[in-house]
Image (cartoon, rainbow, N blue to C red):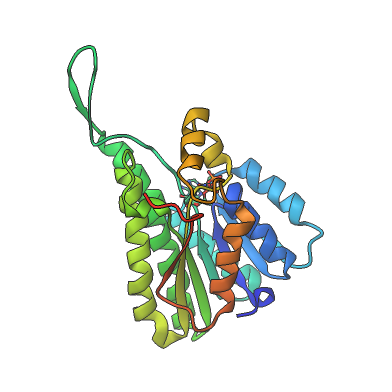
Length: 255
Ligand SMILES: NC(=O)c1ccc[n+]([C@@H]2O[C@H](COP(=O)([O-])OP(=O)(O)OC[C@H]3O[C@@H](n4cnc5c(N)ncnc54)[C@H](O)[C@@H]3O)[C@@H](O)[C@H]2O)c1
């Protein structure tokens, strides 16, 4: 699919990589419905995209909320006269160990269920809901070809302190393969980008000593830019023979 023909939803479009992906797509002439919980970020994104060649509309959406997602996909479908793309990018981290011993009291505390569930809800269930809603319409209307890009993470290989995030991102890469097999008959491809450490507000929130440690463990010695991650998204959209696989863009880092 040519980038300029992409008519799709980008979740988590208000910030970081999703914002970059939305702007790069609209710059190429695509139609993008950017969805996010962050209304302020969406408003400034719409402003930034105003004079670009394509079209950008925004939807305040919590991807983990089924009614929100139904409204998003229905609204974007109507606004653009159909959809043929989706980037499942919205994500959060709520890091913590499975169990932790308090140094002073010796008390052992487990990860609260809420901390586990929130990460699964946004990173995995959100992608499931958005994909299901889009695919259902494409299949019903026989509107293929279409392309779905999931954003996983290098953490899917198992990152200490990220049991919740690793579970969600590993499952997203696994379902990329399942959905690709199930949907090929409808002309729908599904690919996945697994970014390594990338400069965005998500990583800027990390402690400086942690940031330095991370950079040292990357063979290329630095974090990626969102533009470098977009190269993976662009490849998946454009290469009509690519489906069911995950591209690691991680500077050679192994967890
Ligand atoms: N930055 C990295 O180093 C890195 C590495 C690997 C994978 N990732 C993944 O890349 C994606 C983008 O991350 P980023 O670094 O740009 O983060 P970010 O925090 O800058 O952006 C994430 C966006 O998702 C939105 N969001 C959060 N919860 C949402 C919800 N329930 N519904 C809709 N939107 C929601 C946020 O408001 C935000 O705009 C995420 O899936 C993340 O897990 C990031």
